[in-house]
Amino acid sequence: MSGNATLGSASANATFTYTDTSVLSVTAAIAPIVVTSAEIDEQLVDTYERVGLRPGMLESLAGITERRWWAPDVTFADAAAMAGAKAMAEAGVAPENIGLLIDTSVCRERLEPSAAVDVHEQLGLAPGCLNFDLSNACLGFINGMQIASMMIDSGQIDYALVVDGEGSRRPQEATIERLKSASTTKQDVLDQFATLTLGSGGAAMVLGSSSKFGGHRFRGGVSRAATEHNKLCMGDLDSMRTDSRGLLEAGVALAKETWDASQDIFSWSDLDLYIIHQVSQVHNAAVIAALGIDPAKVPTTFPTQGNIGPASVPFTLAQSVDSLHSGDRVACMGIGSGLNAAVIEIDW
View 1 (cartoon, one colour):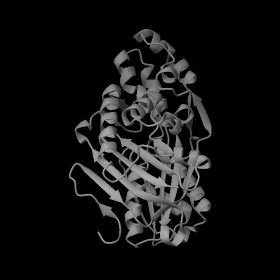
View 2 (cartoon, helix red, strand yellow):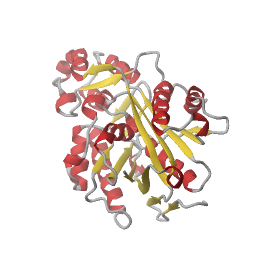
View 3 (cartoon, one colour):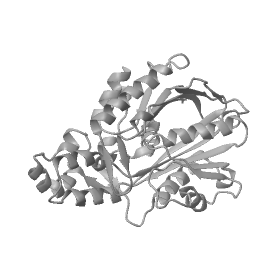
View 4 (tube, one colour):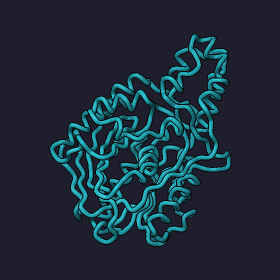
């Protein structure tokens, strides 16, 4: 590949560094309908009693008191477009100047055409704007940033827009109804518990050339895969089944391996902020302990937003922008079922 982006050659992990890419804006779109964990427990109280479980696990175990839903007439592409419009406005970039649009949403209405074409049309982007979907579970947004940065560093485009729109209403409503069945077992509840921790929301980021537009420098990062764990979490819009313990253990181990693999190039032991993919309080605590980082530097959104998939990292970053100052260093970590992980650095 031409340009200044460099890619490490190691077969088990890839190191990306960028010399001319900056984050110009990052924004969140908050879904308006609050659904509390207590409300979900109330719907499942008979099932819990019958299978020998107690209500309250969503709060006591996952640490999630509520999550958000979109109105029924709001599509995933609508959510992504809302965030995208906000990001362009905050960056001061006109739609006709965006050279690349990547939609990284897990949730999608259909197999084809892409969700990106819907977002492209809603935002009024130019015919010459390359647009496509990129899917990699909860790691998709970070992967979108990596691809956009390669194109910016190589001089092919000036601006890129990465968007994501997620919705948990349909899978949660379907799961709740399924778990109400008289045939539901304790194992059924445990296998589908993670579905009830999901949330809805949108996020977007405008990236551009550092030398031309300034901004917050995207330095690069490290990616690593452990695809032998590809069966631990599988889902669609109606059902998601997860080996929660197996996914936690394998995910934390991969996070530690990814973190350790970065040390020859990046020094992340004492940064100003750590943005971790928001799953639950158990997940956050395990990752923080494994990496040996200061929990006071790890902002959380999962207690009121739930796990909003690939939107989680940029959503949490957007919610933390007001606490950042010029010169601060920020690490963002994403882990996607499959398993894939990445840690990246943004210098504010």
